[in-house]
Length: 70
Image (cartoon, rainbow, N blue to C red; front, side, top):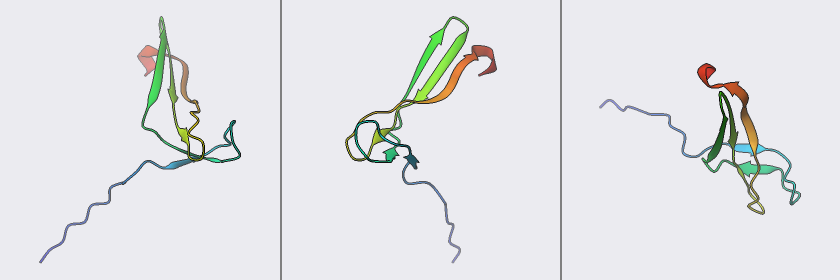
């Protein structure tokens, strides 16, 4: 009998970053993001949650990138 194995992630990875509201240094990815456009420029942020207090952080992914280059 031939078994086929698939390697697939079961959850998003933890992010190590100091929380501004508590002493925790771990954030879990919420799977949410925010995008803001200014004419021909675009900004994008990830919105992870602190594991301890649930506070939201904002990590920059794109900053003032031209829309055509994205």
